Figure 1 (spheres, rainbow, N blue to C red):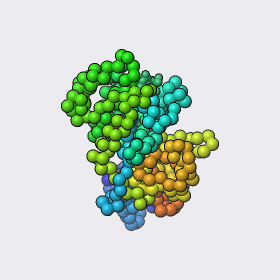
Figure 2 (cartoon, helix red, strand yellow):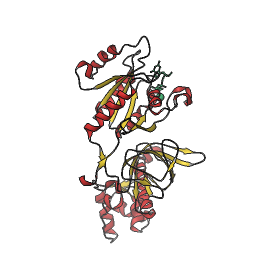
Figure 3 (cartoon, protein in one colour):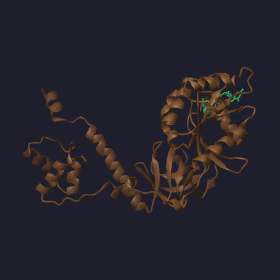
Figure 4 (tube, helix red, strand yellow):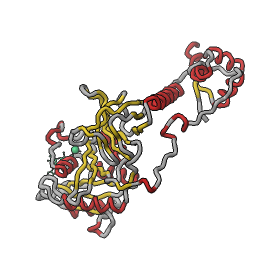
Length: 370
Ligand code: GTP
Ligand code: MG
């Protein structure tokens, strides 16, 4: 059952809030316009004022509530989304750099990844793989958790010269909680003190049994610095992805998940999103969280503007009304009016929630007076 504030109900009924408060007082209920009343009370009031009750289900207003499953025959294979996890400085960003032949680490402040970077890499066999880099610092745990939700496969990077560290364990737990397959990449094999078998044995303590110890978790020795073992890692990812039979319908209005978003000085609100299904096109109208917008530009992981983006592609979207939150879903809708309608509805709901939580009970008011 839905709760509603007296003020909001008055607005919807086209009556004065004070009149509703008065009526509620007659019913022995002491509430202010900002307080919420339950559905039964609201219905009673509506009847008292001689109005008709019109029930609107959530699905009529909010697309997120719609039952909307793509039929099997519309599904086509899509690239896997792989999240790189692991302890600080174990080499996550270096690994991604090596895979895409770029050099992001040098450009980072203090070499610590502050945000989730996302890139697509093509394997020698021609398969596309989408990679998400997650910050290794403890303060970013929440963001990492969100990263796991859009993830098909986790690559756990463990430095062979270090060991199983707190964030290694955290990553193992997130991966298990998400029910996602994991591939262990034992990094920094170029270092003389590298001891990969020690890593394998220590992983046992966390119930991660790698192939080399007859388990079912794939493991591979790599050096992001010397660029060794990378092809083998890509092969293992492709193999794992094949088993998952990842599919999405590309021929529909797009749906995407916000990976990160910020206010850019020159470009306005910018969101990095991962397309989960459908194809996002320039000019599309959309809602994302409580914001509506119209796609002004789509920028790919190379920084190039593109006209459209399909499933599993990470892209930047420009043309948002405001800055959404990481984890928000971006949904393309048929027109601007619909986008505004849904965004407004969500804003209203968000306000209602805040008001409902505000401490405005009569008891506290009287106590304060006494
Ligand atoms: P955070 O983003 O802070 O969590 O770190 P990260 O896991 O992304 O580590 P990053 O790639 O920034 O690497 C940390 C340090 O380890 C850097 O100085 C790298 O040059 C070094 N490093 C990474 N991979 C290797 C490797 O394979 N061998 C050696 N010798 N050093 C490496
Ligand atoms: Mg990093």
